[in-house]
Length: 222
Image 1: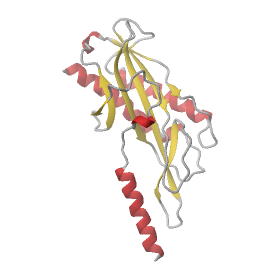
Image 2: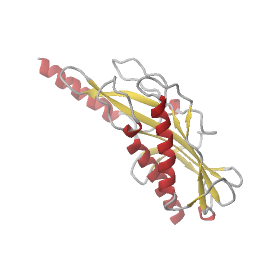
Image 3: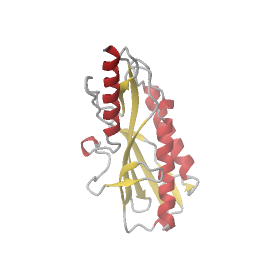
Image 4: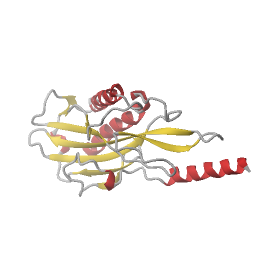
C-alpha cells in the first residue's frame, strides 16, 4: 500500500512539472521593461519558448559594436540564508561575463553607448512560485521550487528557477529595438536547507547568452 502511494505521488508530481509552462506569465512580469504589450511568444535558436519583441523596422546591419550594461536585480532582493549576498553577486557577475563572451563573437565590445552601438540592458527578475502542499515562496529573483518527491520518505528536491528580462537599445538614440522575457531551471538542490551557489544556475545563464548572440546572427542574416 505504501509503495502504491509513493508511486502515485511520483506520477502526480511528474505530471504537474510536465504541464507547467516554461514561459514567464504576465502576472510574473517585474516592471523592468517599459512596455510589455508588444511581446509575443517566440522560439529561440536553442528551441526555448520566450516572450519577445523585435522592432520590425530595425536595420541590424548598422551596428558594429555592443555595450553590455552591468546586470542588475529587479526588484532588488534581500539576501537570505539559502540565497546569500555572495550568491546574488556571483550571479550578476557571471551574467555580465557570459553576455560579453558570447556577443563578442559577433560584435566588438564597446566601452560606452554611442552611434552604431547596441546597448544590452539585462536584469535578473523576480518570479513568484507556489507548489501544492507547500507555502508560497517570497517573490525573490531566484525562486526555489519543489519539483518532485525524490524518495519514499517524502524528501523533496529543490529546483533553482531563474528569470530575466532584457532590453536592447540603440546606443545613439536610446530607442528600444528589442526586448525579451524568459526563465529557466538550474541545477536541483538536494534539500530545502542547501545553500544555493552561483554555479547552480550558470548553465541557465550560458543558454540565455548563447541564444542572444545566435538570435542576433539570425536577424543579421535575413
